[in-house]
Picture: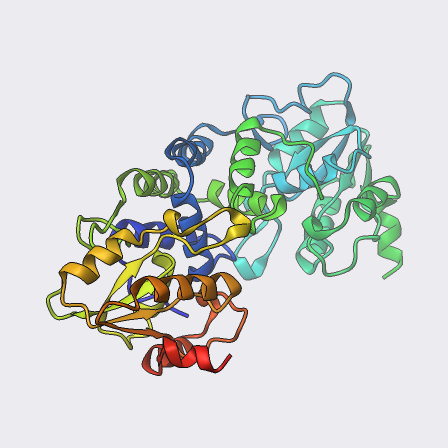
Length: 209
Length: 209
């Protein structure tokens, strides 16, 4: 149902803003806005400010590229993490998903995307240079490719494998316990945690095809 | 899934704020926040400002109590509306729902709630005084009770009927085309529009019980 009439322009503007969010239709947007109208002014002001502040003040970790409040994210800044193992993921959401499995003690590298010719995203759009520097200058022993098990994920896996196979490092992928065709973020914690523990050498996945 | 780890406090705060909204879980909140992070700073600032502004600047129409930008809402201020027919609803959402059926040319009265002993809401918590003044001082010929077809709606209907039956006005209810037990806002436009057109005298619904 499309809403044609609003008794207030302020109300309509707020509904329109919420309806821009992914998966939020006009009716849901309307419900959310009316909910906010019933809250304390202070709480709503805080809601608005938190959003604005988030976008204006948030940084990217200069080492792994994850969303961070500081120059270095808590993981890259933590001396107890094993920095010889680098888990390569598409975005910050994946870092947080894997971190919440509590199965992983290495560090991360956020590509900031995935190779997708359909969307015009090629290797040069990804944050790979940074990963290469890390491999060349640091004591990296293994990179774990933890990308979505989709066509785009496979393409990106293969690209990274080709690019880094000459280096003296292990290149592994997370175990295919994650159902084929699923986005990483929808996997349950158990499956996701296990797929980190039972990662397999990338080369061995090639022969299975 | 509960999210324990966030790489950023700003991110966590924003996710928490979104997760306070009704029907928005932590995972959805996270998805919305990451979406905002990918938008232009200006757009996100506008989103935040629109919400804050809405809550701080919005008024209630002094005549019908609907959410409004001005002292009088567009409907109460419109001389072409038939002010002798008053449609009594629970909240502003219902005004907008009925208005969008384009089946109604009278004015509205927003009670601001519904009698609900379970939630401790009695007649004195509703904006009824205002309705009584309107009936006593104006040329009201009919009030249409357009409340949800729930126990609480029926109770409120009956209360209003008892309170106003001595006045020389017609008291009608919207036709029971709206499925019993449904909240008004979830009715489809056709059903809702028809239920306004085929409203029945409140007295005649009593004998059917």
